[in-house]
Length: 292
Ligand SMILES: [Zn+2]
Ligand SMILES: [Zn+2]
Image (tube, rainbow, N blue to C red; front, side, top):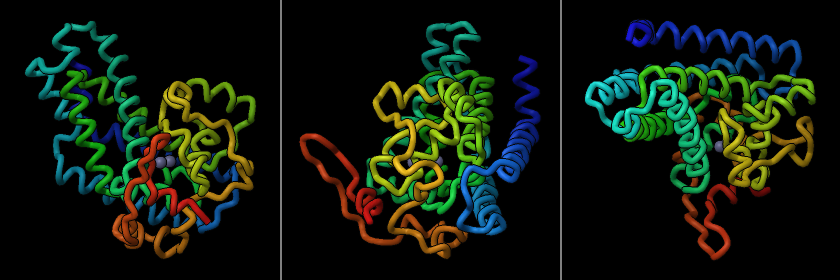
């Protein structure tokens, strides 16, 4: 298909144009209508959080040069996956792929909160003392690799169309940066928007230091999974201005706001393991860190 070839030829340019475009739009929105006061200066936050973004894209290109699109091209050339097997029409295959990949991202997010070793990687995202557009791209390189492997497997099983994978990656990038923004939205607009997409007020609840709040609103793009599986929480107890963002036990700026400390976050402290009882299977490491 002609459009697929255009995408393949200009992937990097299209992807980075969307990234810098949304960064600019949300960055301006944060200056004009901020939701909360930042605790760490914007220069330090943007310098270090964007440093992680550049490091991650460099490492990704090194380890997986063909990336998700490469996997999708290979899978479709060989007619692999459910959507190819059942010869699903193109438009339906695109919709199914986007919704299925989003559901997998939700499940993966629940998993990285529940399993202690995975929480260690994911806590770099949560240790941010503030919540702004750059938080949306702040993930530990090992978590990024893990996400890639999960995504590759999903593409193979689905037989995901190249264009659908491309749309999904761009949309997820845009929505993740939108819903992490320190941007004020009129309450009425937020209420309508969050029926279709995760809004900043919805996802901010997930970045609370409180364990029950951090254990809600796992969605990054579509808000329906949280409502469907009972992990939805409307607002934080102390309100958006009063709530504390981050993790109780990791609040030293050198550790959580500067690149070297952030990269070391998964490897500090000892593991406390699982708590298994009849009513819950939970991550004690994470619970400990969310306690006072
Ligand atoms: Zn999380
Ligand atoms: Zn987040």
